Figure 1 (cartoon, rainbow, N blue to C red):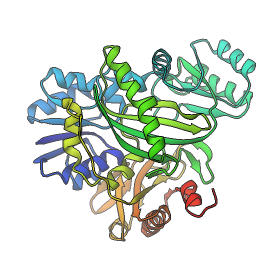
Figure 2: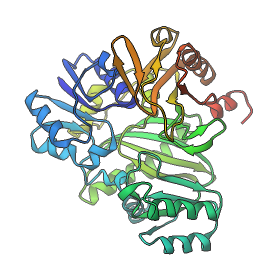
Figure 3: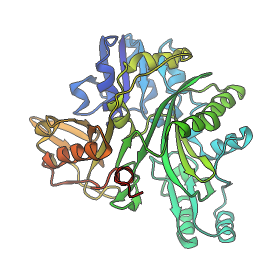
Figure 4: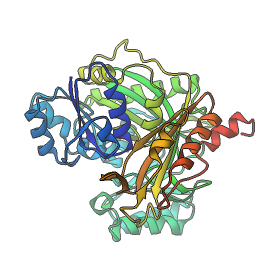
Length: 428
């Protein structure tokens, strides 16, 4: 097959890495890709949100299958445009991608179909939102309705903090059009996990769970980011909990979307809070997580490509995937200053030596090659992944690779996987 992967992050590097290993893959491109992806695929300079350019390229190169990584091109309708051109693609169409594209739409959908989630209100008037927060109190959650690159959520511990979040989004325009409407939600108690399922419009199969670390600093401190690390599997999601998530959240969502006339195909990423009442949905994403994808594909034993094609073809019934009996843990290395202002163009050394360490794989995100130099060009730059028989071993291998990388311009959290390690040590 001639395959195009859309995107340029660590998620897309992980997908290219897995797809390139498939015997079904004859030619692989990535648009726009990055310096690390260039080792797996031919990178083409087309932006991930350039829908017309991507469709034109796929037609010109007789691409058989397109795998769309980021949420933006999905919400913009890339899969629909490819289908109209007779090109098969992995991911939901624009109507179904509203599960992530509009948090308000998603919450209304859950209310209609009885999917357990936090109580909520939608607001287009900032003063009405402020009044609601004052009446409700804190802790409380404020979310932009639209896409905000994983940064449009504030878990406010005080009324003042919530009002500041409302003002930043709705008055200050911190997230552009994405913040013109907001959702204010009930704060959920418990432990959060990321749960993934492949869907074909009618059926769904579990890909298991991971746990992400959103805040920038050790001990879950500082502002939210796109994700500073993840590990899989997540001990909080045992077999019984996974079955509940499938039965109470994933399958009702697939059935509800089908009943509403917008069948959901692609990967469904459910952010779930697990508490005394069982699993409750925090939000849906319509793509693989980043950095969760890097951990997931590092554990996958089966060929990923037939599974992605089966999702697009509506053929997931009785489809089975095999997984390696290992833990995978990913540490994100970011440019100093992220998620705020950061310097671009700093040099990264030692990648070759780090990648040769036992159980280590390095996925690139914001990188570019300049001659024989590797330069950092983004906020989140590398996803350093270790695998092992336990979370502690995977953690040790990931950080050994991190420490082998010579990049004074970068930083990382040093506690990725802390919850699971505490469980292993009997301290949780």
